Length: 141
Picture 1 (cartoon, rainbow, N blue to C red):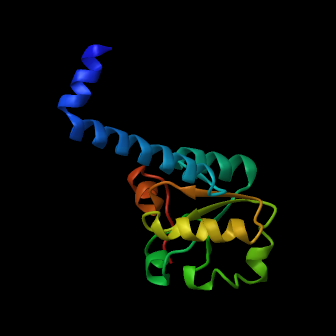
Picture 2 (cartoon, rainbow, N blue to C red):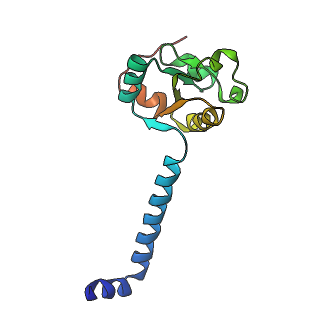
Picture 3 (cartoon, helix red, strand yellow):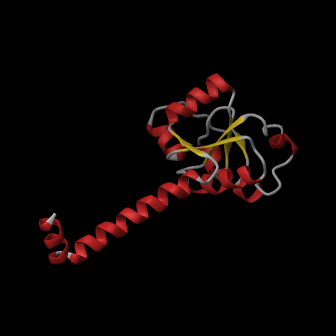
């Protein structure tokens, strides 16, 4: 114990950096758990789609969506999320997987859908970039 105290006294900057990093990790984990949606892998997304009839909502721009999207995905640009329309409202009781090109826009969309009362919302980790990287099928239009 004396050595630990001596080390901390001699390396104060390193100890402060360690404690700061630890606090940031704890804050990040608590924030992640309180966001109201799950972040899932492509493998988990495929399982949700195949076994639980999950709907995929792609919030990418129209150009990105046309280049590549998951087959059967609903296209709902982020700009239209506040007024999603009656077709998307039918999905309220189904599991929803939100996706965009890389995952950034989808995170805001997932939060918005949770606030609007959608039952089970998940975010695809890595977005379409990860989906394509994992050699999963895409559709173009």
